[in-house]
Image (cartoon, rainbow, N blue to C red; front, side):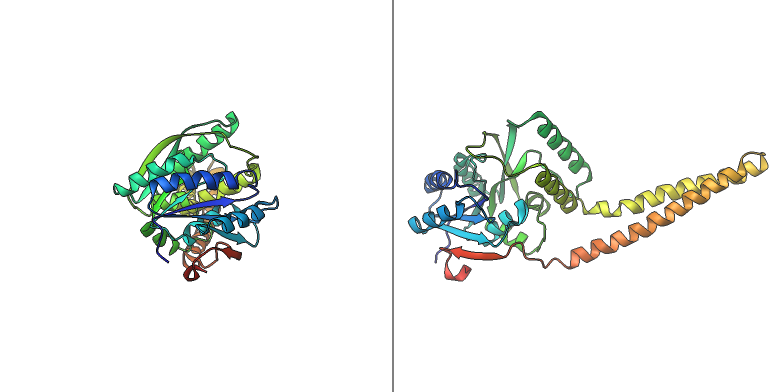
Length: 312
């Protein structure tokens, strides 16, 4: 089968209210923007009838393909697996709830044809509760200081990725892929397109506090692996304090000062430095093991529909 020019990957979880409408909207926009396209719906074990609707869509249009996961693999692994399984020369990843506007497809394709290898949509503002916006701003501020590569605030992963980018990232075998960070870390040419994110079209967000916290922790660990070396840095700092206290204790002996107290403080600081050093060395070994053993599949598929035989 000839490779389509454009793949649009849409992860789903309990999107019965949206899935038919988003496919119709995406089909209309992709038909105008690309010479050929496919839609890949990857379902994360929905329980509200979404799968039955996806089956109907696949019967109605062979360009719509489906992957059904055998369980819910979360909001990082499932969408990324869908991107890796798509076949287009360019791949767009977007949500099913219209918070990622399908009208942006043409703009993304235009930027890609102009030479960008990655095109990222960047939220200008979002209609969200004040607390959630504040937490997100704080998260971006922390990541921008500790991450191993630049972070693009407001970039949620909604965007377009060249086939070369997709194939390169698939070879990384990340078990918990922070995909939007991987796009930046990979060093490919990036174009950023600001947009205003609309309200969710229907239904409720599936991202509660627990899932958002889990996502944030995965993002932090995936984009700032250098944090594993933090105990070594703290050990060096505490060791310096221990050295200073030891010197002060020696001076106190000649000046009739509290030498014993200073000596005990120096010993305590030195002991803490040794403990932190040991933890840091173990963490460094863990980091190396993680780097060398990324062989966990992102998802286990239960079924595929409408995929070419070469991709089954």
